Image (cartoon, rainbow, N blue to C red; front, side, top):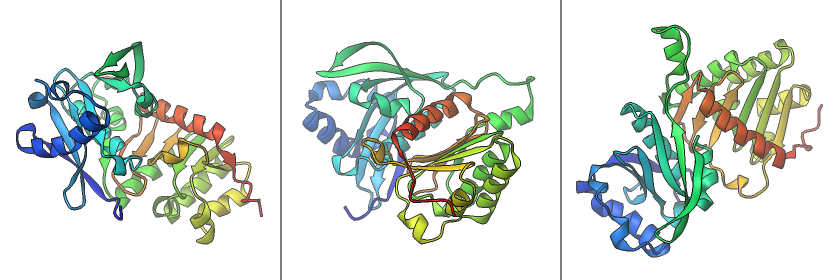
Amino acid sequence: MASTDFQIHFARFDTDLPDLRAVRVPVFIIEQQVPEELEWDEADPLSVHVLAREADGTPIGTARLTPDHRIGRMAVLQPWRGRGIGAAMLEALIQRARELGYPELELHAQTHALGFYERYGFSAFGEEFDEAGIAHRRMRRSLEQEPGGAAGNATADTERALQNLDSQPEVLAVTLQLIQRARRGIALYTRDLDPVVLDQPEITDALRRFATDVRGAQVRVLVHDLRRAVSEGHALIGLVQRLPSLFAIRVIEEEPDVQYASAFILNDQAGYLFRPLATRFEASACLHDPARQRQLQNYFDEVWERARPATELRPL
């Protein structure tokens, strides 16, 4: 498939049913052999639906949020899997649930997908069970903000606000904030060192100042492919080579880590910026969300242990 461009739209069950069927029938009814009478239920007309569409409008993914605060019917057509579509739909529904004031979300996850949902803050509970002939487990995620300072504190409210970003200037601005607010640790999960963000002067200068001015500072970077960064003289490569005790890069090579399509930055003050698809600027971010930051940090640490040190970047 030549293009990997897609967009996420909210849909209506009554008017968009043909497009919902165009995804759910091949994924659930044909591929997973779910009986059609179980696939469509009374919750469908009452639910919030999202559709992922190819650039020409062709539906390629869908999911729903039911009135009982449950995410489900998450489906992506086979040729589009592994490209961040499921993550983008999930983020959209989580944000809509926040807007609706839901205190938490639940879902029934197929057991092979537990790791995917764990990366987005969901935790499994209860015993494994059968649903439509497929093994599932229940998962939940709290959407409540952790308690802060005095009531009405506008600064605390701003710090805990979920931000939705969709442009390079917005991503750069929040990335800079996260670096400036870090105390001792920063973690960067990237595809190719993300030159449109991490090779910008204001970002690399902030990273250099953080690493050299803060006692005990550590910047850890995970990357899928270093070739472009090396060939184009990425500024972060120079920092790693000049300051190897402060900057560390590891290369992701193992399955299923290499299939992860997202990118994110974390600091050690409960801040994060998460882009469901690393090749796009659409992102969610928060300057203080301990639960979400911790969940992303745990995933980063797991992959860090499996990744190999970038020995080809020997210090100058």
